[in-house]
Amino acid sequence: MKKYIFIIIALISVSNLMAIPDDSLIYRANKEYSEGLYNDAIENYLKVIDNGYESSELYYNIGNSYFKINDMASAILYFEKAKKISPNDEDVIFNLNVANSKIADKIETVPELFYVRWWNTFYNLFSVDTWAKITIFIFILTLIFASIFFLSSTKNLKKFSFWFGIILLLLTIFTFGLSSQKFYYSKKYNEAIVFTPTLTVKSSPNKNSVDLFVIHEGAKVLIIDKVDNWYEIRIANGSVGWLPYSAVKRI
Image (cartoon, rainbow, N blue to C red; front, side, top):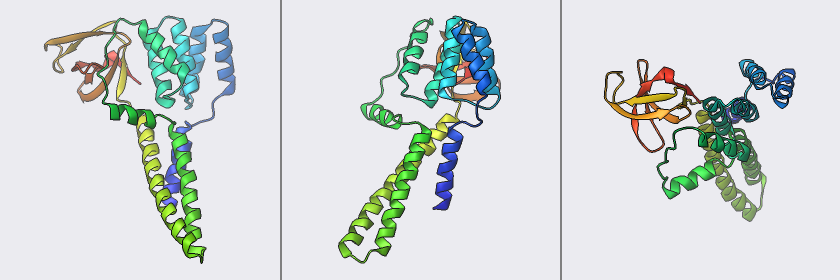
C-alpha cells in the first residue's frame, strides 16, 4: 500500500511540472507581451522552460505570442503542448482551432467509434494530477472502511464496510490506472508539427522513393516509427508515409 501511495504522490509532484517558475521572468514576458514586444516575450517565456518549468498557461502564452507574429506552426506547437496538459481548456482549444484555420492543410479527421469518443471524453475530464488526487482521496476512504470492518463488532456494519470497501478499492485501482496512463502520455512525444513550408511524404525512408502526398507547415502528424533520419507518420485522415525527422518538431 505504501508503494502505491508513493507512486501516486510522485505522479502529482512530477505532473505539477517540476521547478518553481522564475516569477521575474514571467512578469517581464507578460509585460513585453502586453506592450506588443512579442519576440522579447517569447525569449523570456522560453527561458522559463529552459529553467525546468512548464505548464499549460506558459505554453498558452507562448502560443499566443507566436500567433501575434504570424508564426502559425510554432503557435500550433505550443497550443498543442498546452492542450496536452489541459485537454479541456476552452481558451487553448479555441486558439488552437483559430491557428489551424490559418494553415494550408485542412485534413479531415477519421471519425471515432462512439465508445472511443465516450471514453476519451471521460478520460480527459481531469488532468493527471487531479486524477492522482482523486485516487489518493478514494484510497483514504478505502482505508477508513477497512478500519471500520476490522474494528466494528456490529455484523451489519462489518458487512456494509466490507462490500463498500471492495468497491472503493476497485475504484482506487481504476483511477490509479487512469492517472498512470495520463502521466505516461504526458511524457510521450509521439505527435509532432510540420515545420517545412511544403513537404512531400514518401512511401519509404528514402528521398528517391515514391511521392505519396503533400503536407504543409503547421500540419499535425502522429509518429509511428523511426528509421535512421526518417519518421513514419500518420495524418488525421489515416494516410501514412515517411518524412525526414528534421522537418517536424515533437509536441
